[in-house]
Length: 383
Image (tube, rainbow, N blue to C red; front, side):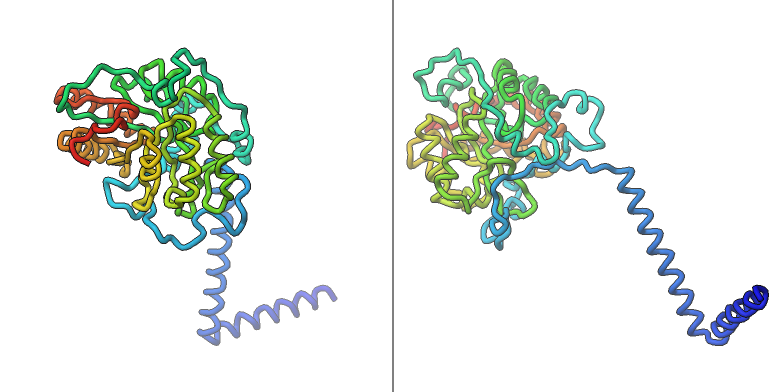
């Protein structure tokens, strides 16, 4: 009986193949179906293998209390975002390039870094108690004077450059490398980094100046400014609360510039709250100018605060040759106007370019100054 069943099944199977052979069209369809099944299976297996071999290396920084209908950059962009600004004005988010937490980072960076935020840890980092820093300077002075780097007077007509490095603090190795640069710079620290007191102390001990890099809402949907960022949809009381919370994260800095903020810096009502707090606390404000619609400089000037606007982004293209070209642009601007303010980021390429260019610029008569000196009125030949 079993043998009859096998013979019957074999006969039916043979009949199916005979029918396929009799019809070329059916045979083609059958072959295509087999090929499609094989490709789908191979792609599925390949993706599974890739996930196993390549662990996620993204920085996860959660922005707390953002409503679903108020997500960053969810509305149509009606202003100039960083992506649309022409060179040399287009900034680059240093947290998206040369990621210090990347699986491809060097062994040196792995050993030097000790502040990696863990997944879902953004709120925890933002709520850490304020870092403390001993204050040996005159406490009766406003911070923009109290923590200013003291430099000898600059001879009239000497071209001056203030170099500001943003996005500092997340990588301890880069803080050390920046602090070791022999010419004066200003390092702008993100308030949600860990170990800020030590990093700020190191920076100041090496003769550099310090600012706070205040997170503000960008227009770009995919860009996350970080915990406790200032967002346009927040109430004015919450904006004030977040501003104070960020300012209290550490001390020893002369003032503030905006981290991202192409959306928020164009929001005059919210920026007025920020500027009132900065003025009352005695800080200066540097407008990073990530949008041409920013009102930061205007509002700061109206309040009589030391203030200024960034002239050049030096590492919008992140390779050493391009950065050196932007530094040449900065130098020409300083020679022409008396002063230039340039912003860069803690990329290896940027640090290497600065170490090569700065001594040569000094030999050509350039004087490097801290941001507190650059924002004193009447430093420019022309505005």
